[in-house]
Length: 124
Image 1 (cartoon, one colour):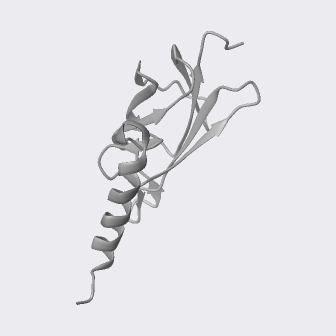
Image 2 (cartoon, rainbow, N blue to C red; image 1 turned 45 degrees about the vertical axis):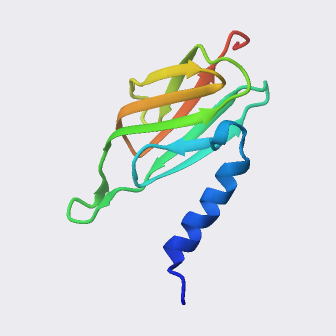
């Protein structure tokens, strides 16, 4: 029997999940938004997450905002808030919740690019 590639991937992901602490990945995204997401350790030890929106609309010849992008990230220190940075410097709101070593972030409308800077008690 030839195994479907999607079944192979699902089996691989399932086997990895079994060996993770509390069976959770470092980074999980809700749904299937067309985004790139890359966590990054800052020089002071805090975390930042780069998000890129790949939802290109051919007829409009532009990247269109994605409604409600939610991700969850394992972090090594409590996060007290966020600073969001966009390419055009525009204010962007987001909801965040830190609990048991995990940060959950929801961006109601994601533009082309967002840098999510995690603020901690040690933040400058």
